[in-house]
Length: 417
Image 1 (tube, rainbow, N blue to C red):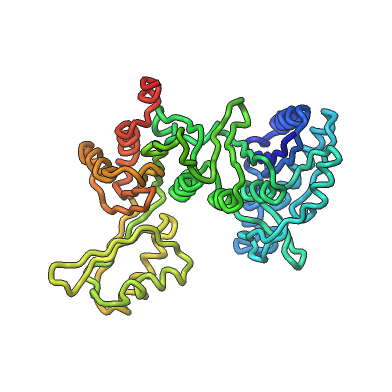
Image 2 (tube, rainbow, N blue to C red):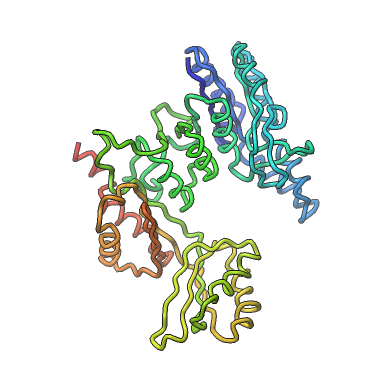
């Protein structure tokens, strides 16, 4: 007998018929003798509907009341799923985040889990119940309902799996696993049998939307086996493991595990800024004060040595505000310089733990892009990642070319077997 925590996203419970299908899947696990905790999101579109109504009433609603409102979406789903399980003869009990004892801090709309009380949960499981839990939500020390941010149901699932010491946390979604890249952009993308937490963290942070990054962090921190599966078809999915065990079967890691990309980027450059100590802080300090996250940073030294060009990227949604801060706060402080911006860029990244033991990945990447006449604007590297900024219109071409060049195309894999 194993203990599984199964999380079903909004599309998986998007209608009454789909909720019934989830109940059948859960029943199958229980009939095989397993204990099951089910974490569900709101039905697809429901959270957006609730936010839309709130904005019609008040375009600046208080965070506390927004949490009170949007948390009701999951409450609908847990009760309907419990009813569907009862109809199948499966004993089940539904709980909101606060009822199940998910304690969070008081940061409304983006709360973080602090602890989970599992006594009642474990008692229900021992009594043969299926426990159905509302994802995305918890309660602070003062009894206020809190939410964990969009996609927070993944985090709820992994956190419960960690607290219960579950054998596996299964994330059911509308894809059947983690792919080498987005199949909608590269038709030859292949599903990965497994991937490390490190690699998944990089992919999640670089634009892959399969899993919420906080959920992956939680899985790595508490060593929770995490598997991504499809709600709509059977299959092994993708297993996300803590690390790549260096045994005889895995001594030679694949060079690249995946290619991530995003067009949600904007680039800003301060030309002819003074090349003196502290200038980076004077540029980025006001940006940070506005809660704008900076991603890639490049600083060049001009030939004269007295001035530098300082370039960085932000999310495209923060572009206009960042441009305003630079012109109204930073340039007057520096006393000189000029700002240029471009919000028609994209970031393409190679990710793989195999990079640690292989040289020449960057040079091969640059050669492939050069052969496709794709100009590189910026470069950023880490131990298992290389990212480049290019023109947005060339993003899909770059992804397909790199996918083939690094042997990730499905046809190439099949021909090797």
